[in-house]
Amino acid sequence: MKKPDTIADKVRLQDAQTLAQGYSPAIRAMEIASIIAFVGLEAALVYKLWSTHHTGPWLLTLAVVLGYLAADFVSGLVHWMGDTWGSTEMPVLGKAFIRPFREHHVDEKAITRHDFVETNGNNCLVSLPVAALAVAVPLNGPGWVFLAAFLGAMIFWVMATNQFHKWSHLDEPPALIGFLQRVHLILPPDHHRVHHTAPFNQYYCITVGWMNRPLRMIHFFPLMERLITWATGQLPRQDDIGTEAAKALVAVDDAQELPVLQAAKELLKASAEEPAPSVSTRPVP
Ligand SMILES: [Zn+2]
Ligand SMILES: [Zn+2]
Image: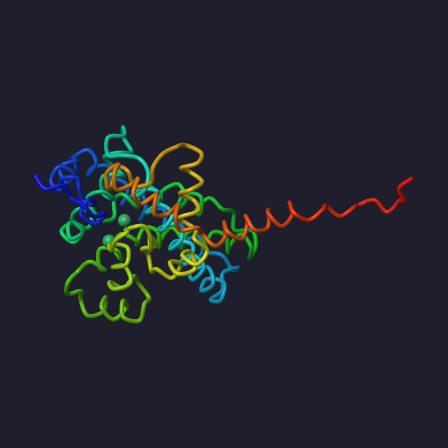
């Protein structure tokens, strides 16, 4: 057998079918229960907000927009963790949470074949604690109302993320979805393509993608990866692309000095060269 020789060839090592078979009836039952519980909690929150006199249109609009930005960031962070660390062999987490990330990279169209439950159940489950918290916030004043509306909106968008992500992989989305994608109010397909292109380590935000460029500018994910590799010795994306490819990518990353690390080193060098200014104002005896 010919050995794959580029990083792109080495990626996609896991068998898509084995990964797809990890979807068991128990997981599906858990997902259906999660969707019902999530819809119930969000409905309770809307009812509570509707009943209070502190709620106004500006407050709600601001909460919904800031919630959208926060959800986009959360989608990026969770997606990055799922793509980068852990393995499908891990107990509990492996099958329910890490498997879908691996499957999506070896067969990115599989998500378009998932029905409503498989697409959204996972996100509903992880969203439950925050939805419950939003309902529990006492609505004693505008600040509290804003907090409840922000949490409720953010977790609603977090829940909608897989649906928006699925739509970005459709060859021919329905007209309204296509329009929302073109005006970039939900994740556009060409924007998300960057994530599915070598070296497969950027543009993790998949709710709307507005946070992708700012996060890339500050090298957010490469810095987090270096920190975690330094602290734990784990290689990023080892389970996803295989040990060899992960090592090759880390070597490439190490060779490219991040601007922020360069700046930090220069600062340290400068402060080491210059004599420390004397803080004492008293004359030396
Ligand atoms: Zn991914
Ligand atoms: Zn995707």
